[in-house]
Length: 99
Image (cartoon, rainbow, N blue to C red; front, top):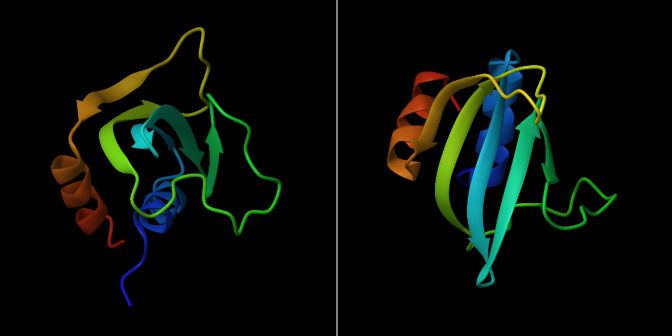
């Protein structure tokens, strides 16, 4: 079975630990912004469950865009590698990283 989108994005940040992903998504019709770093996801808009088995980015979420940033992430001074990537572009980067 193929890995979920969330799992693939988390695996990407393990493979590229110098990067942080900020994922802008629509979840159940509501906007969310999710930070993913070193295999962990956390919502920047809503509360995040303490159980890591509960996905922050659930199946059925619509990814609006993905930003790649240099770690460590500082919201007051973000260092962007790329901004506003489409899911199609990000999917290519995931494939390049082997996830």
